[in-house]
Image (cartoon, rainbow, N blue to C red; front, side, top):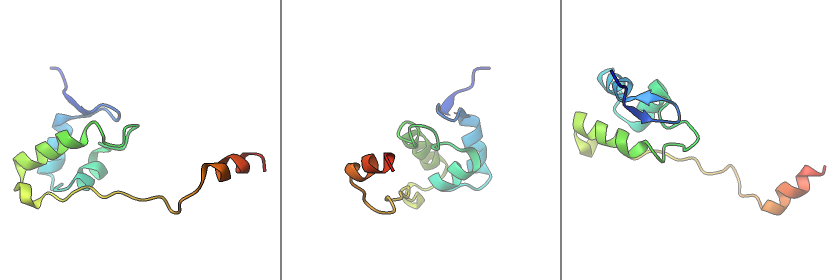
Length: 87
């Protein structure tokens, strides 16, 4: 049987996400914690929409919360990074 990968970066299958939802995951963050979907190189840009669609089929779409994002600790200029390389 062919596996359908939803998160290609972390090789998370549709079945794994469905199991996470059945196990009580009701948010993108909950699925991410259980399966690592969205934690790869693309940071969910490829799979987030697919996972949201899967959640919408299993839950009331109004209950689905948007994903959280973390801003940088503080803004830094590129020049500061380059200068730091020579210290």
